[in-house]
Image: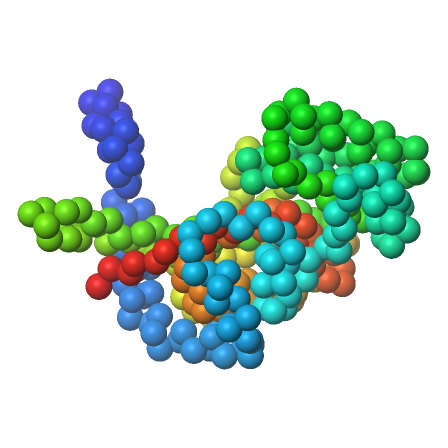
Length: 297
């Protein structure tokens, strides 16, 4: 009881703790190896792409959540991360045009910056197979947007993909914290910088918690290591005779590493799900947050 009470103090104050010494030693060993080898191996992942960063400089100038999916998809495309083809419909005529371009079955989603978990509010319509179902989906999502008092929402139409494994690839930045004392800016806490998360995606990500973490910049061995630490890796390697494009999954991880090194202003990036099939991967839902970056020395 005394131990649990003491650990509760750490937990309540968001402080890291370990129940067993070997866990703490493993973590310290990883950080030591990362600090010793990170700079030496960093170039192996940086040199994989030749990109035009200037095209996105304005996009990174201010702090905001990027709700314009077109801009985000352009950025991902520049870094060779394919997105599932999307159209936006304002009315049934636009929805019909989307259906003609994509073909049935379809998915329709209500898109708004406030809707972080669309399935929680029933903002997704799956497996739309006909024009009648398309119209029903559009009307019901418009009613939902009104009920939720959303303004300037969008209706996104995508092809309904069957047989894909759903992954999550995300990045979050832990910033340095400063305080003002007597007019002087004092560093209070060093930040870890950007951390990359990989694992099982989809609507059950937070339930199964089958994820692994690495600090950016990644080393080459991190690309395989972060996948290997998850249970979903057994599926990707071909469990039950079904093959998946593990090579493309690794390429996405490498390219996201370079994206973050090129644009440290990105404080959050969430691709969930990332669909993977036998031949290819596609980013389906993407959220990105840009925030001014002040690294600690």
